Image (cartoon, rainbow, N blue to C red; front, top):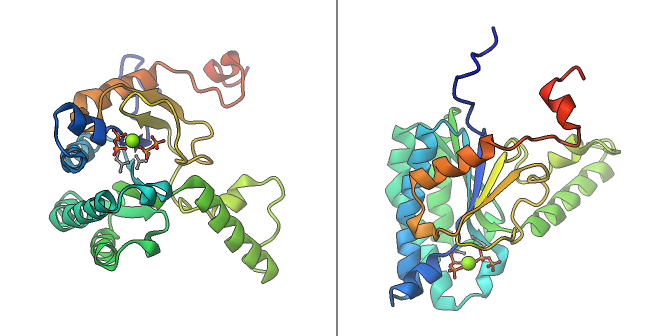
Length: 249
Ligand code: IPE
Ligand code: IPE
Ligand code: MG
């Protein structure tokens, strides 16, 4: 039976967020940058809960890029400590709320203490299927493509896979996001309107929302506004508007 036309639309299955603006948030207040990151962690907690309440099944958060290692060592160290702190504090809550934790990125290169916390949290939540929180850690889209191409070539050489031809789904199984659907909506905070090496392949047909709000100030209402904006868009995937509105056209 068709859904009544006045029913609220389905939330996007996968929302991915470039959490930006922690440093500027702190600077505006005359605080050290790390204070902005600390406040950013509280936003992570709030937005993870908000996404769950809004029925978003996959939430990906860009937490640390491969390029971010080039920041001052003290800031990188503080970010790693905050990550460890976040995982220690939130794992029980993820279990309670039945949220599966996943990562994308070269997590093998993260400090061992962080990897241990990650492994623990991932194992503790592996059985959950309703909701997935994906942390992009030491993530870069170009690195991901290189890693995928290397693994794909190795499997081809070993006869474990057939050449994909123009079948994207065969190659995309080698990306970090193998069993994660492509993002429907990508949000970037802080007013920057760039992608910064985030999910370049997976966001091929995502809708983008850019907001001037700095990440520590981003709230559930901002997430709802971004989703409302998403619902006003028509996703055409290369088709005409007529084809999309009347699938038989
Ligand atoms: C985002 O905030 C957090 C990370 C990239 C780790 P920034 O630290 O990039 O904040 P700005 O862009 O300097 O304001
Ligand atoms: C992107 O933010 C990376 C994360 C949010 C983790 P950056 O602040 O590192 O991006 P640029 O340098 O402004 O492009
Ligand atoms: Mg930034």
